[in-house]
Image (cartoon, rainbow, N blue to C red):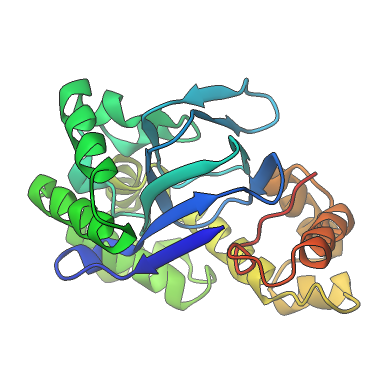
Amino acid sequence: MEYVSRVPRPPLDGLIDDIYYLEGTPPYARLMLPPAPSALLIVNLGAPFRIRAGIDIETAEYADGCVITTPTRALEFGYPVPTRSIGAHVKPWGLAPFLPMPAAELCDRPVTIEQVWGRPAVAELRDRLAMADGPHAMLTLLEEELTRRLCETAGLGLVRHASSVIAATCGAVAIGDLSVAAGVSSTHLARRFKDLVGVTPKRLARSQRFAVTLLAIDFAGPIDWGDVAGGAGYFDQAHFGHEFRAFTGLTPTRYAEVRRRFLREHPGHALDGWPLPAD
């Protein structure tokens, strides 16, 4: 697969981690993306893809693309062969200036880009992207579109600062301390987070801790799950196992098996740096 990405210019860099282009044949027909403290925007340029947001939710098809606010459960992607898309990995608060609705309405409910920006606008954007001269030109077009759509958002500074503290502490900060430091009530802070991130500060902290823990594991070697749990600050290994299943639908041992399969069957793959197992 071809994967090209870069960090956007200010002011988008305060909202978006990177914009990317993806094209080619996926390693598997289905890939599972564990929940992370981030959001996602995809403009699809190929055949429709499918997403299932949790094991108890039906799979939905997306032709134009999708918008995904900070998830609380794993996302299962079903890719067409070949696949082609352009998108953005967005900071937890980063989608809010582009959404016409509170982020909480989209929590674990991915929607099409048409539902957010309207069919005519999305059709025009996809046409311009399809005619662009290569991936880098396409990234520039997407960056220009996002910059044009950027809106002032009440409470963004508050949520951005609190989210940054959560990230800096790997999710270990006391939520009460966040509200005290910000000079607002815990209720107000939670309401702002639901509006702009889609989840409460406490839920974001859980996602942050789990994501940091998962990314730190070396799946190429033996894993002492007790040491992993203790090092991440979980009460015990049972607590960590419960969180793992809640977030991914898999046990830690099963996740390790499918992750190792990915690394073994597709060494050096363009998606190798992503925690993408397939089960």
